Every structure is written in C-alpha cells, then in structure tokens.
Image 1 (cartoon, rainbow, N blue to C red):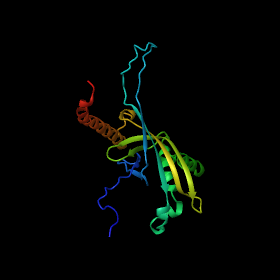
Image 2: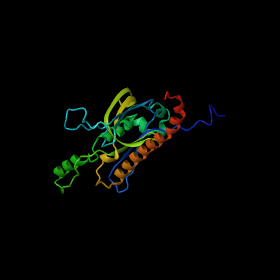
Image 3: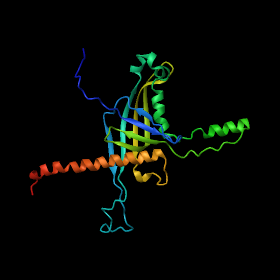
Length: 232
C-alpha cells in the first residue's frame, strides 16, 4: 500500500557540475544538492558606459556593449543523518560525515594544477629528472544547474560554511553553506580557447539566454490581454 499522492511530479535537484581539462573529452564531476535551497537570490547589474564628460546630456544612457553582470546567492543544507542510518551502504559518510561534499565544493575555488609544488618538492628530494609543471592559473569550469531553464557557467566568488554538528572523530555531520556565484557570459571566455569544456560553457550560457528571450516573447500574450486595462 502506497502512502501519499502517487502521481506527484519528480523534483529535480540543483547541482554544480565541474569540468576539468585533463582529458580531451571532459568528464563531469556532478555535485548534486542534497536539499534544494529554499530560495535563490539573483542580481543583474547592467553595464554602463560613461563618455569622457560630466555633462549628463551627452552620456550614452542607452549604450550596452555587454550582457548585464548576473550574480546568484543561495544557501545549502548538508546532513549525514540519513546516510548514517544505513552505514553498510554509505561507508564514506561513516568515515567522514559530510566532509567529502564540503571538500568537493571547496575544490571548485582551487586551481586545477594543485599537484605542481608537490612534484617540484619530490624532484628536489629525489634528484630525479625535472618535470615541467603547468602554472596554477585557472580554476575549473563550473556549471550551475537549476533545472532545464537555467544552466549557466559560473565562478564562485564566496563560500562560507557553518558546521553545526560533528562525529566522534570530529568530521562535520551537519552544516549550512552559503554560495555566492557570478555568471560567466559567453564573451568572458577566451575566443581562442577551443577546449571542449569552454565550448560547453558557452553553449549553456547561450542556451539559457535564448530561453529568456523566448519567455520574454511569450509575455506578449499577457501584454495583449492587459491592454484593455490601460487607461489610454
């Protein structure tokens, strides 16, 4: 016997999707949100060009050379209680609680070539052949997935964690994390970068932007229905 409404729609989970350039075909590392945040705060800041003058009549008030800068802010809840109830099927949670999930998000802020200094240190200690190490200059490409209507490349600009409970070995088992994201539009990527992960990032941004345009056009239906309510 089933409980509840059997035809309830399946709820999609938000996620952060990481792409690394280590292989010709990028393999996504998907960080699925355990619980969807209750709200996502979005802010759009239009680009504004001011000419070399203080005369407000000459300012290019309608000039817009770039897409508006968009930022997102959301809060995530992480908890190991459900996993710890079935320890035989969740060995990672038994060992480290939710530390693996926190670490997965934290690593999105680190350059991908973090092994460079370690290799240099090993070379100096062993006297072995020198290894050319790529400079640690770039973080991985990250997509913010919020259903089929919003899949955009982002850069994490802020991350804070409030760890609220611990296991006997002091790994966190409950925490609240706050994420601040900046959406990267297609023009922000190097035009000469032909890597697969950058192509995917550009395509996702243009896809989401196209949906906004389509929804804006669909609002014309509401506009025609509302014309009779206007006082002119």
